[in-house]
Each structure stands twice: as structure tokens, then as C-alpha cells.
Image 1 (cartoon, rainbow, N blue to C red):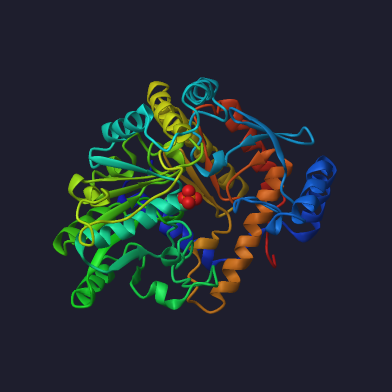
Image 2: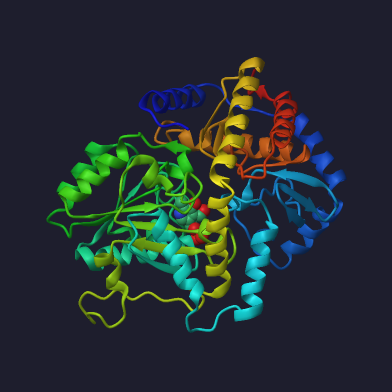
Length: 478
Ligand SMILES: Cc1ncc(COP(=O)(O)O)c(C=O)c1O
């Protein structure tokens, strides 16, 4: 685990070193061979992509799909393995972008959820005992949560948190830390992924949507204090939202003291501190990032992991006095915050969440997944060093970052910064495609999530694939 200042500073130094040097990537001639190999291995997936493009924008529903050169179509998933429609087998380190801690299709979980559906149906529009069971389980692990409300996605839960913070504090502005991701609601699609990137990622959002948003650079406590001061007579700051490991699950890492400094500032200016624990809750530890840092948030946003990936997966928890503003009819027109959702708290999500948390605890999934990640991180750093690359890997429990081109570490304010970030992203996409050809699935070609089912052999197989792919990598222009 990376917890101390020295380790944080070392990561920052290595990021600077990587982004100020040449880009390392797989040369085009080698990529041609990788793509030809994927073509040969996966003709059915290639054909399915052509069909998909006729009925789905971009040919795939999920934003994480690597379409370089086409996405593989998955037919089966079990434990750490995924199988595509051509019969190829992959070791999965995407884990649905985080929520899978027990392994895909973990039989005891599937059994419990199926039993719940067979008995209760998928939901009634009334209530079920699983709602209570899940809420109690979340409270047990998160002392900052008195009350828990289910939503249908992490995006929705963040939207609810912003509105609730405004109702409770009677203040207007929301602070977001540059580079962090809080879903796709209008007010949050600003400086996503890369600090200082502004509206880079989406058109179609009127500027007014950002009128009450202040974006502060990561780890800049002085800038945050300044924001609090200048907002004092201009509506005030209702809440500060953070991904507690730093943007993109720690791809832009958080200084270990930053969460505590945020807590102190939020207290001083009577604003709410919102931890977006969509990835970190029940993965970093059963008590999430707040237990890891020993910092209590006022509101906690939960997402995909709260149902172990079953739909619909979102939730908001927090202090009773704040959360009670969500109660209908409590103070109509004054202190009431309206939120809704037909599918919220349905039997699939709540039974999946309840049983997943039980199994994660019982099976010590957090510890096992973290041990697998430690092995992966250690192995990767060994290979990087042995092969003489300036690359580096680090992990926060079962979240592993491996930086070969570091696109999100680029300071895009610098001359040609955007071009550099895009070229680095391409290098990483190609790296992901080459790993795919070797039977390894990662997130964006620079992140790996482990689960309790990853064995030493799985990690060693992945390391072998990395070594092979790294053998193709060359310094650009070198
Ligand atoms: C930290 C964080 N917040 C919010 C979200 C959005 O959640 P959802 O995709 O369920 O809307 C994500 C999704 O990746 C996330 O990682």
C-alpha cells in the first residue's frame, strides 16, 4: 500500500520523469502484427463489431471497451477468466472496472441473488427486507454513515450528493478536484481524467452548468482555501467532492495529508466533505478510503461495488441530519431534497449488495486481492528495472497502476501538452491491445484490478505476457 509522503513523492517524481522524457510505445510495424494476430484469433468478435456498429453508437455500449482494433465479445466469465465468442481465454484484470472482488459469477453469490429473485421477484415498488439488510451492512462498515439511500449508478448518487449538500448547507457552489471522475452529470464533466482539461471531454453542456462549479488542482490546499474565501460572499461552497485516492482511483495520486486538510477546511467553512468511494469502498478496505486515511466524510458516494456489479448500483450514505433532508414531506419547499428512481433499492441490487459484502468479509477478499496486487506490482517493477525502462508500478491494495506512457500525468497547460497526452494515450491503448493478444485484459492499458480469485499462477502468467509485450516497446524517435 502506498500510504506515506515519501512514497507519494516518489510516484510524483517518476511521473514527471516519464512525461518530460520521450514516449515509449510499440512501433507501428509491430502493432500491425498485433492487430493481424487479433484478427486471426478473433474473427467472430471482429464480425460482431461490424454488426454492432450498425445498431450501437460506436459499436459498443461500455466506455471502457478497447476498440483497438475491435472489442472482443465476451461469451462467458468465471472467476478470473473471461472467454470470447471465438473461444479465446483471457485473464481479466479489468474486473468490470472495479466492482468484482469475489471473482466473476462467484457461485455462492449467484445462488443467493437467484434465490432472492425467485422468491421476491426483481422488485415490487414497495420495500423488501434486503433494503434494510444492505443499509445495515453499509453502516456497520462505514461509521460515517447513519443513513443509506440506494441509487441506480455512481453518477446518480453524485448528482444526489450535490443537490443534498446544497439543500443542507444552503450554499451554492461545488468544488471538484481536477482529474477526478464523478460520473457524467452536466456539472461534473469538467476537468475529468486530466487536471486543467476544462471542457475537453464533452460538448453539449451549457457553460451555465459550471457556473457554480469550482475546480481546484489536486493536492493544492492553498488554492482550495482561496476558493473558500472568494466564494464566501458569492453563494458559499456547499461541498467538496473528492476521489479519495486521487483522480482516476489514484492515477493522479492524493498527497496522504490532503484528505485531512480538506476535512479541516470543510469544517472551518461549514461545507460538506463528500468522498466518492465508487471504486474504493470495500476494495481498499471494508471501511473504504475513509478508514484508510482515518478521515470521516459527511457524505459517501457508493457505486458499482455496492452490488458487486449487479444492476442497479449506486448509493449515498451520511450523517443522519444531512440525509434526513431526503425524506419526503419533511420540510416541503424548505429543507427537502427531492431524489427518485424507479429501480432504486430493487431486490437484485440489494440482495446482491448484502450478500457480496457478507462474502467479501467472510472470504477476506480485500486482503487476498491486495496480496495478488502486491505480487503483480512487485513483478512489474522487477521487469521494468531489468529491461531498463523508466516505467513504474504502484498499488493501493488491489488497485494497481502501471505507468508506461502516463497520459494523465501530462501537464496539458504546457506547449503541446494536449498533443503529448493524446500520443501517450495512443501508446497506452496499443499496449492494452498487445496485452489482449497475449490473453490479458487490463483497464486502459495502465491499470489492473485484482480480486480474491487471482492466484499466484494468474499473476505470473500476466507478468510473462507483460514481459513479452514490453519486448516490443521502443523509445519513440529512438
Ligand atoms: C470514482 C467514480 N465515481 C463515479 C463513477 C460513476 O459511476 P457510474 O458509472 O455507476 O455512473 C465512477 C465510474 O467509473 C467512478 O469510478
